[in-house]
Image (cartoon, rainbow over all chains, first blue to last red; front, side):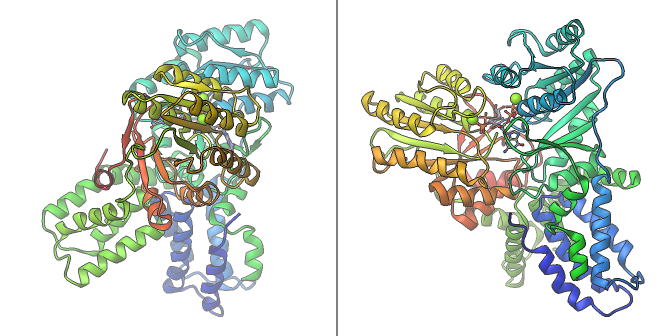
Length: 307
Length: 306
Ligand SMILES: Nc1nc2c(ncn2[C@@H]2O[C@H](COP(=O)(O)OP(=O)(O)OP(=O)(O)O)[C@@H](O)[C@H]2O)c(=O)[nH]1
Ligand SMILES: Nc1nc2c(ncn2[C@@H]2O[C@H](COP(=O)(O)OP(=O)(O)OP(=O)(O)O)[C@@H](O)[C@H]2O)c(=O)[nH]1
Ligand SMILES: [Mg+2]
Ligand SMILES: [Mg+2]
């Protein structure tokens, strides 16, 4: 992985800061320039970056530095604290309803990884002794139903489909009936990829939501997403009311600034991370690890020791 | 915490609605060039995924031009910037493969979910419209139902499909497809490949092998290797272009999903840093939603409100 840069640059800046008791505005500004660069290169939304930086400045300027830390170490500590805070502190999970079936609906842009994630999530829950049912509600994309059926077969998990002639609302409703009849305690609905600005298709999701009242509506987001992540997430959230986010394709070298942007504008927790194409490559999301990944600092604490 | 979110939300709201308006006002009002105006321009570039480095360069050029009095009023800023972006992106437009002897072989590569298979459907349609005989090769034998997906596209466009079963060797599919293209005198052969992250060296080796097999059968082939980039992608696209370029000599980019609100500004960095031109853009999921790339139009759209 190529997370070069920020740590070294900050070390350089901090060398100059060393040996002063109080953080002056000039000191902090210089350090913040590097932090800003790093965040933008990691695809954190520029507006989020701006607000984030000004918050850190507010906290840092004029601060007495603790005995045990150099001024540089202190700035790193503040950055890391704020970032971890913003990422959501601790990890969160999906809510299992006391009255089964728990209904989970996956939504998102085209190609984000919804169908694959539906399979992964079903597998994950099956390992916890749940009895998931996968629902093929993407009636548009060529071979989308077949794709989910293939995954279901590989996982030995049932897939409910009515072909591509019935509408998603009917499909979802009948799927719940089938889950009740066969004692499936989790229903995972795969929906077609759509643009957040496509009113007709967003309305379709609202109708599905109204018909089956999902316990969890999860936005699936590609971790390589750039500046537009906030607009997309904000739109989906406003129209559907999201319960959480799943970040996919984190097995690559994308720094994943989208995670921070989305968390900052929607407040929705990120619940899982997709770490590969294989069906067991789904992990609970760790906000603190993501914070240091975005900053490209590896282990921030060890940096503090070195600074 | 919540206060911060709220503030941010309204902040973004405001940004979206007033950016271009404000710039437009300032510019058409022949306003003075001030620090704030330059900041706003920088913000437009950053928000279009142009990236810190390339944005920095563009802003430096602007400042230099202001110093040299090449830019004197605010209304000259936007045309200057647009012109710069246009000249970075110009060169390498597609000629649709007119000059190549048949079969013209196009290999399509990229990370997961960017729109490779759909683009192949659209390209197949484009060439079929020109009355050419088109063959599609289903060399994504990995992803669930990838072959079925391409088969549906072949059916829609009237292209022929070469496929093996799921899980078989993609290089073998490519080999058969080249043989078939020769035997059936196809004009165009388009090879679909499985999505893969550029960081996975074993999968990148597999891609190299597919290319080698094609080149062994027809020396100049594949005459075109298209890297598909999703317009929603941020700075990682530069890494993608670099690595795919190193491994399979990418000759051009297809920028998909430009029908969304993302601007795809990262292709400016890709062209500037790596010299890889954009050939086509994708603007929807239908078979007609493919256009030859137009640098001037793209540069203009970066500054337009959607
Ligand atoms: N490397 C990697 N690939 C992933 C991950 N999740 C999904 N993919 C791949 O991303 C591509 C798109 O995944 P899909 O599940 O088809 O995406 P989708 O959101 O259902 O797509 P549409 O239904 O067309 O909108 C496939 O090639 C998947 O194998 C992940 O965590 N890591
Ligand atoms: N809105 C929009 N959607 C697109 C465009 N191009 C492709 N898509 C959609 O993006 C999703 C993924 O497209 P695919 O063609 O399956 O992508 P791929 O790169 O072949 O995916 P893998 O083979 O899984 O790596 C599908 O839902 C397509 O319909 C485009 O230009 N605009
Ligand atoms: Mg899908
Ligand atoms: Mg494909």
